[in-house]
Image (cartoon, rainbow, N blue to C red; front, side):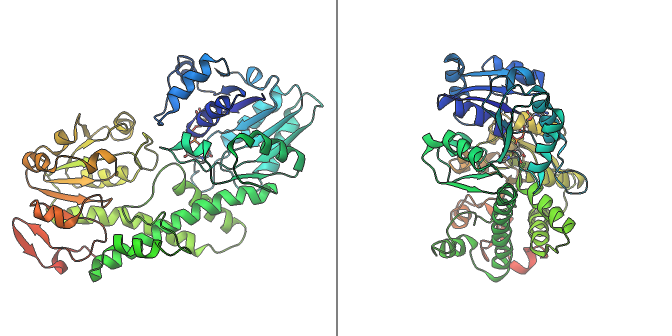
Length: 451
Ligand SMILES: NC(=O)c1ccc[n+]([C@@H]2O[C@H](COP(=O)([O-])OP(=O)(O)OC[C@H]3O[C@@H](n4cnc5c(N)ncnc54)[C@H](O)[C@@H]3O)[C@@H](O)[C@H]2O)c1
């Protein structure tokens, strides 16, 4: 059994702490947010993450997991300290390292014995050296410490499962022995471990996220061409994905990526590249295409409703992806703001994200069911592909809407089936499907927004 402290109990830190406790370690999770610590101590998770709260309760009961807002309590006797604080984007696009530096100062001042400090936050290349320097400056002991970069790849919505079944563990350090100690901590997972140097590990995280974002932008660009030329992007992705060199993942066309990672990480990598004298053309295109995907979705609403003023728009799904309540950089925010600024009223339903959504979009009417969101709506928008929307009673939706128009930003319905049901339905990149408006077929060139 090892003693571990985790600094920062957000999506990454809480999952890391809870899961390492479940592997039999003694874990103290520390956060500067006193309210969050109080909530955690009462056995409640401040975030929605499937399976997390049950695991948390079990390990608190077994006295392997505790919470504090005090660095000294967290660091005392710890063999390992994970840094899992946020690295949001700053105004110039760079990653803001303020929280990481504060965590390093806190750990440094609280050190009493030898420790391995593991950076799990996504940080620009070179940050490990900076953290090492800050800790050395603030430490009051001569006990040795080492820094290991251990970028995190978990996905919100399946974070607990991702912790226990990762594709790989990446560890970077100038101290091979320290990296091996961290590798041993992961032994129960039986996963491939890649040990490399500190800077390379830091870059692996950015390169991975930028690559995934690029796949999404790639298929979104293809979807736009499909829409114009009468091909079906879902079939195109299926055909592409069957090629082993390509693979099927991250080829879902839609309204683009959001969340707390891809937008800020692509931007931070571009900033890093530009600061190093490189010319990151692909990264810029990835971001531009992503922004365009949201804009084109709003254009579709404008095209079908002609004037947004006074219209009622029902929205299904607000979180940036299903199975999370995370609203950071969610496409729903930009889309709803654009609709409201055109004079539309927005009614929305999301299974778990409405409380957080209300903090950023107070003007939206939040509804108890999808059918309440659809009631008297001129158009329904699918923004997040929650499973429950795939099983929705479409006849009931149709009955309560003012007019049966669905614009689907996540391609969860079949265009032919929707047409049979009498909906005017518009997905993303689903070819030259007929668009029904007031029972009339419009030629495609009259309804496709400008590229
Ligand atoms: N969320 C994800 O899906 C995900 C996945 C992989 C990597 N990451 C990276 O992991 C890092 C953390 O992300 P997150 O989503 O968990 O962030 P988060 O914002 O959910 O949580 C960060 C937590 O750190 C706390 N904190 C801030 N400063 C602190 C300090 N000095 N001492 C102690 N606690 C402090 C905050 O109160 C907050 O609870 C980021 O760098 C992110 O890019 C996130």
